[in-house]
Image: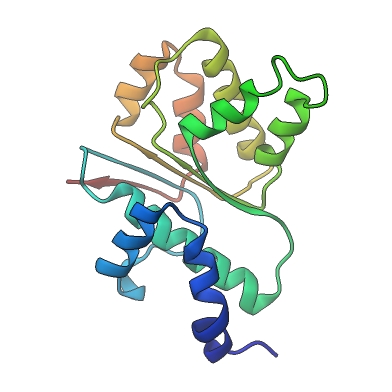
Length: 180
């Protein structure tokens, strides 16, 4: 049986070490109380720069990993920036050993996904399409997903030039959180 002590002494630091050094520092300096971290599920967190969206999502991710560890749940849990998500997909463009569908499957089938900072990159037809595939697949499969963005959902809709993806995000999320 797994214990809180094992989590605290062995696993927690390993999970946090997978974040960027900046986010590791923020997590150490700005801890969240457990009661302030939303329950396991899907969320859209939006607000201005430096409002704490990514930090909240990171704390949510750590709690999701803890839940997976304590309850011995299967599946891959991922925390990725939108920039890195698109860059990962672009690796397949000139690399015959790397297929776009395989990369996309990693994200569409993850048991838990945090997609940080959507809308931070310029929307092109290609990345709107990739985001639509990601969101629609996760929506249809009822997979928990946390999104962060500087954009409200109406602003995301305008930036994408399409209402389908924001509409699915609204329907799949347990709550829309505005950070100010």
